[in-house]
Amino acid sequence: MMSRTTTASVAGRSSSMRRMRRRASATNAALRPFCRTNGCPTYLDVDADRGIATCPICGSTQRLH
Image 1 (cartoon, rainbow, N blue to C red):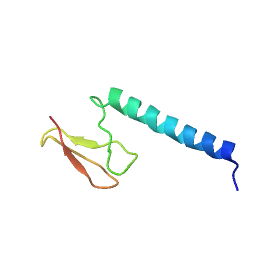
Image 2: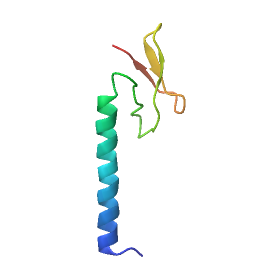
Image 3: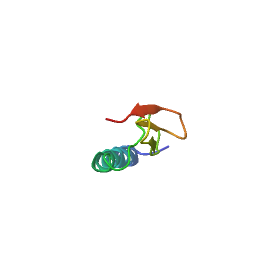
Image 4: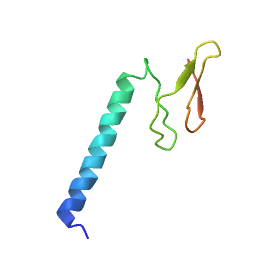
């Protein structure tokens, strides 16, 4: 069983990692769109001709502006 200190540090670390991922994906959003469907951890494959980006893992699609 984990102690309260260990649990708090693990929760803080995971929160920090999510925050870093959001910041990294925000700065790279114009270059490489990131799939945000239920925490899917992949970049989207962009089809510039159709204006659609598709996730190779979960199959989610997003329209490009």
